[in-house]
Image (cartoon, rainbow, N blue to C red):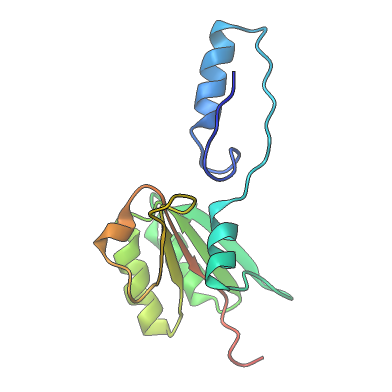
Length: 143
């Protein structure tokens, strides 16, 4: 049996729920995980965004993260932010990014023929869909 998924099965994936369910019913079933390309890496490549360099770091979270955590990442110019399935946090991230002068990109349905890539400023409510990724890279203007 094989399970094919978009992205990497190790990051916010349904894969592990399915694997555990199958193994709970059939302990003899082996699981082999083949890494894929994570959505944020695919989006960064497609949008020509440098994710991290030098002494920078990144917060990877979902739209279910507490706003304070996301806001703290945006407040830190050395911190990049990646949000999967941003939901309601998209609008707040967009407003905070604008206020702080942070730019970002939003990709939806990556890995499908319907994929779209927009700037954070251009992102609309459609970008709150399940298969959406937001990247706000660290600030690099003064280097």
